[in-house]
Image (cartoon, rainbow, N blue to C red; front, top):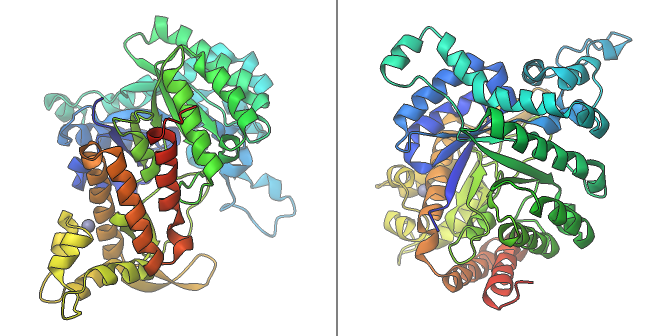
Length: 472
Ligand SMILES: [Zn+2]
């Protein structure tokens, strides 16, 4: 099996530098449809330049069509223009401009639903199947590429042979199936994918087509609902499938959900129409499922500012705390917790913070090599946790990470994640299980069992599902 794909999700323009400065740390890029629609020209030029800079060249993997955003239109509302003295608040309620712009490009029922501020229903989708599917696929094929050709930079880009921005794979529209209501959307989703397969054969034959399956973690933990999903999707004639588990944090997931995840992937990978599956938002447990002796995932995507789990519906960002990704725990911790775990690993015989111990025991990525430097490595490490006082939009004073702390923490995170993918197949599964167990025992004594129990849980599931012959 080839090396697992490490995919980065482009979230906001402030992240552009992370993509450009860490070219070796990821394989491909995923962007959201609303970003492509709203920042059409800027994104097309950025992606063309990124393609030229990136060693793998064809860097844009896919554009997420973001169709679930129109199922729950209220989640994408923007109240920033709301006049609180206005008696009729509904007159100022509006869909976020980026989503409205995506709806304009899609046209038809999607445009109508944004105009009326009403959610899209399965019945509407079923009535407008062909034109909606074609609009969504055509958008992915042509929207950025057309924008690039219309930019002033195009003649220079063409000269440099950077004259196309097309995704490696087209994603069929998809709709989120909430827990306990899988049957509401399942049939519609399957019809949408079949329609896209038919359309792609004639109109987009040069492209690979993938389906997206979006369900909640509760469905993973519910054997009856999960079986319904498996039965529906395993029959689909697509070779590639992207999965998105709504807001699914693998570190807090319960056993039944993680086992359900393994079961779902096993059935879809080994069924009558075997699929190559990519997790749109996943953490280290998903990375382990890419291991050559497991082979349930072909790749994992996450955002550069962490983003290892994400809600299917667009929501605003939370309050940023300085956080540090601890490589041994494969998870990000609030800096003071990170400090507690790290300092217990890096003391030399005299009890002092040692740079060499840090590089040997914690992390030796390029960023840590330069940040945790002599003569005062401990002060260097503290740069990851630097904060500044700032007044939030709600008027409350909080401590926010400084720009430098965010920058170096993100670099360290991306380089560490890259290494996880690089060395994944260099160890056997029993060795990975052993690593997880020893990290758990260490974490238990530094951060407490509640904070790191997921490591033990992951180890047990890998052991039980893939090493003890219990793959039912
Ligand atoms: Zn590092």
